[in-house]
Image (cartoon, rainbow, N blue to C red; front, side, top):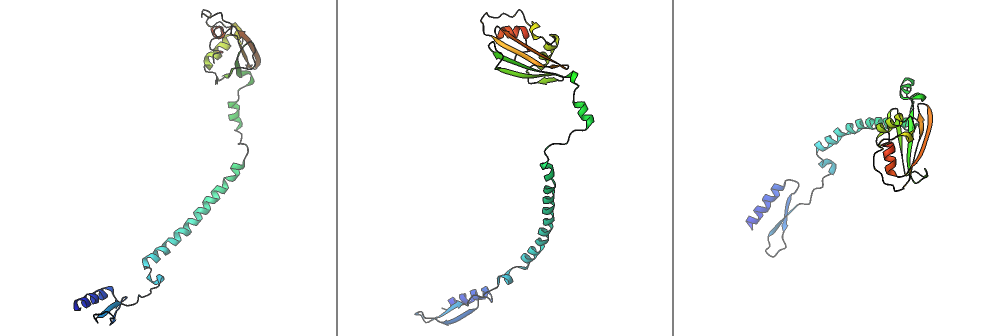
Length: 209
């Protein structure tokens, strides 16, 4: 029994003053004395909080206060861009830039080309836009098409690009049209070829799209 009491007393001393040891007569059959730890000591959470944690919370408070103006500045910046979003039309370019971009009416060369299956031009099966000043548009070969129109003096019916190309005598008509403005003058062309091979041998890349 003495060794057991010694061990219990050592454990109580190691626990410190918050766990006092008290003894009373045991009720077990051996008639010994039972050693129990004292009632737990209630400690306030505020008192138990380390001073370093409190200081850390106090140190971080100015950071949150400093971040508040930044959020206000961001909100002000977002609010400042709302008038630009509300605008319906962008500002026009300066007159000198607009004058450089716009071509004179006598320099415009814009053409619409169509190809239709059959002897009627409507409805077209395919159509492209050809711009020759400057060269561009949706035509797959705008440079060749513009050169052909210019050499034919806006009359594609006079073209004979590849007259020796052999074509069958099968009649499968295709109708082509060309209309637009060339150097300030409006022009229009329409022709029906016997088949696609005849169209290609006559007009070349002009209606090849």
